[in-house]
Image 1 (cartoon, chains in turn brown, green):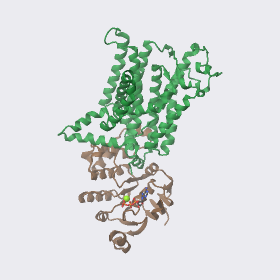
Image 2 (tube, protein in one colour):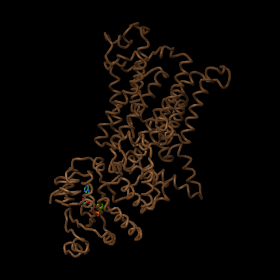
Image 3 (cartoon, each protein chain N blue to C red):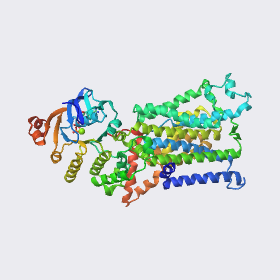
Image 4 (cartoon, helix red, strand yellow):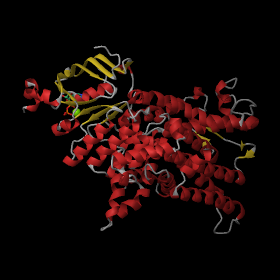
Length: 248
Length: 390
Ligand SMILES: Nc1ncnc2c1ncn2[C@@H]1O[C@H](COP(=O)(O)OP(=O)(O)OP(=O)(O)O)[C@@H](O)[C@H]1O
Ligand SMILES: [Mg+2]
């Protein structure tokens, strides 16, 4: 398959840590507007895959292209983020001393250079956009609270809100519902589905009911490469997948 | 726009700080120059210079707090920028001596005559002019900090390693300035100043004017620092202090943010040094001593890291203590300082300014008090720019 017209194109990507292959010739293609769920056992390389896409880890070999022709392996984290790739970490990381509002304001799509932020004054549009995101993430009442004092689930939502504020073309979301109640999990699935279409999304998650609720194409990773790909029902029926992951 | 920038930083705390500085700027000249010497409200010129010295240290502490408190860069070499600013001013004051030196040489300062130098080194050119020296007070520390920071931050040196190389920087400069052939007076440094801007540097009015200039510089720097902290740039700084890689993944080039704050801070430290030298009458390499930089860290820790006002308070109080101890019990001063640092680290993680919040949190039956408390914990763990992101 050629990289043309794809949003994200990974081909033969390998990463090893002290001889251990965390990614082993991984190939994956995402189309614009697509949402994809990634599942796989612990240590399968799901987080490492996000690391190589966002420039945190450099692959040893392989091609990573964004929008068909931008080579991500040569860029630094901030440059990749500015191309329109946003990331939510497995452990929620919000800026704890700042308020919920300030966290969103920092994430909001706006010029990122120091002299621009020094003289930044919030515009009416920016304000409206933050209000909108507060609304979507149900954090309106908590706008003035210090992010450090939020509950675990609220931090996860704030982090998703920060991703939305960044308005990226591609969102990488690592285990968004870990530690959430069933109701919260359901709401998060709704939230992600509502943003798919406008943005492309890759979600990593262990929670099968959540993945089912998303109802999108699933990629199963194991030992650093793709084991199976297809609808959740199709991959669940795959005997290899049952052996390595589901059947435990 | 500039006005908006300054107004942004003006909260209640800033108002109090600026009000106190304004009172000092008026009261001290009046009490020194116009209140008769036998009145209990009279201030001696000696006291004025001492206060002026404290405020120079306060400005250094403020500069340090900007990088340590808000970017998590624990600089153990900030006195280097202070000393360089001091040398730039000292060079101007040397040129003002003119032919009145001991050797009466119309072109060369005494120490150069003594070394048998025939002409003024090129890097002394221009220091005949106050405006040139004033620019150099900002430019030289700023340029050094920029170059240093550019390499250190790009190479992603953080935490303890960064602290160690800042200490190495000031130590290297200490050794360099000790050498006679550097052309900065070697061991003895620059001293025996006579005039500043044509006024006798020993005159009471000049001393008072220098004090007022120091208050003004401190107030202006405080306003700039608060404006920066209150801006979105300041929020980025605090964010990267606690979770630098997270900030990078949001598309901010964190290196250039640190470089901005670091360079600004070095310029402020340079101004502090430049005001210090005419008030104490000498600049020598001992200002580069690693211990000077470490003392500055203690001032900030005592007053309250990441509060700006605390840095000023800490610098003044600790130096008042130092003046007292070195007069009364000189042998004990270093023990007292060390003990103070340990005590503050253990019992006052937010310094004196955090004391109020800490006490409130301790009071029983006050649920709301847990909020400042969690902040205390965050600040304490946010130490030395450790990358907790990811
Ligand atoms: N920086 C690193 N240094 C050494 N080994 C690493 C590093 N990062 C990841 N690994 C290893 O690479 C493998 C893949 O890790 P990764 O975090 O990508 O797994 P994962 O699929 O996200 O697992 P989980 O579901 O538990 O989050 C693991 O064995 C891990 O120990
Ligand atoms: Mg993971």
